[in-house]
Length: 226
Length: 226
DNA sequence: GTCTATAGTGCGATAGAC
DNA sequence: GTCTATCGCACTATAGAC
Image (cartoon, rainbow over all chains, first blue to last red; front, side, top):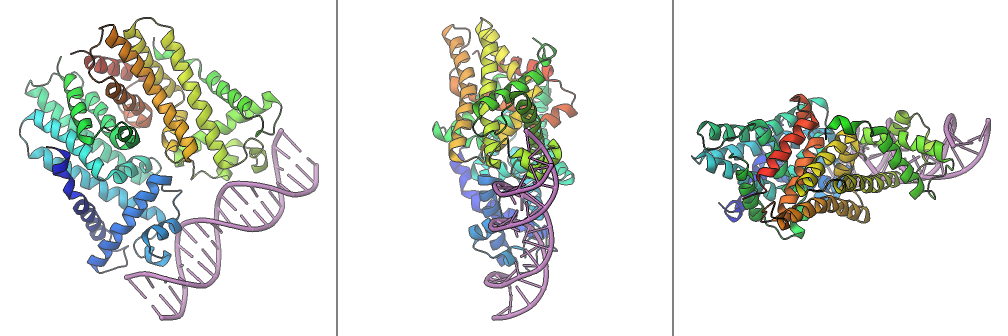
């Protein structure tokens, strides 16, 4: 699989997440027409993620958000009840969505080696398609209130667990011989995260997401056997 | 080398950084007595880093900082001229200091293999001793104004360059056989950063900084030969 | 469903007493 | 060198017109 095969799905994904958000928060969202609401939510979330990635969520004012979305203060407050609410909503639905997509692709292949490769690729491709979402999860999670932070931590561990499962399967099938599966999985995550956290570096060096994926896969595979 | 050998130096380092800051910013710092100024700067920077790591720099108000330091608004403004100024000062001096320490330890050993091991250890040990500084550099750099951001980027690349140099030396001496030195060094950085960015995970799993260092060293060494 | 206008709060920054 | 008091401004949030 190459990135170009994956790329077409971008707008679909974001609309899906917003539709989930609309359904999950129908009591706090005052707008009742689904079509209109989802359209505006896509607008609001894209703008929020853009502004947050530029200056951070807490430095983003709701007036910034008005300017970016073209909506008024009053209109914005029909879609969430406080600014903090806006942060929590984005965080929760997005994280679930990403884990879902990854599992879907991993389950579609059979061999352990292919599962590992596809897990790495899909994580990178997703973060290439919607970098603002990934950056938002990473950067804002540490500032959230305890209850919300727990959900973010659970989500980090859930993606890690996906890798742990694959590596253990490989050990059992004697394809890999990994001494410390948890630590190995644990080291893979930051390598994947570097792709969106230091995007400027790879852009500057003209390294594409496929280049990065190819390198990471062969780099990690070197460590899986004695 | 183990972490316990390194640990004793903590307060010295922070005071050294603050003394550098005092000397480099003598025009904007209104206090003239070095002893007093350095003492208050240590207080102010520790408080800033603590509050920033809890809620982010932009969400930290100067009133929060008054409470945390025990100083008044007026007193704070004798040590910096604007809030943004405070951010820039911490960023610049701290980064330089860290690169200096790393080079000092690397130059003290001879073999390439030892240089690589010591570079990994010192980076981890420094971030163990002053995690708030590292977290601050990482988290706040992306929100700084262009000029300051350039300095932060230069600093990220400078630490990366330290690793590139070691790896290239290893290739030349036929000790390593690395195809893509830049990419390899580039992958090492996020692994080192994970130690302070996801400290909660390693604390929870009772993994010490020495455990982490040992694992990372043998993990990376597996990838350096064909 | 979206707008404008505004209430009420807390911010960064400064002036002047001690 | 540090404090208290206060200014002006920008913020989140809401009420009521359309």
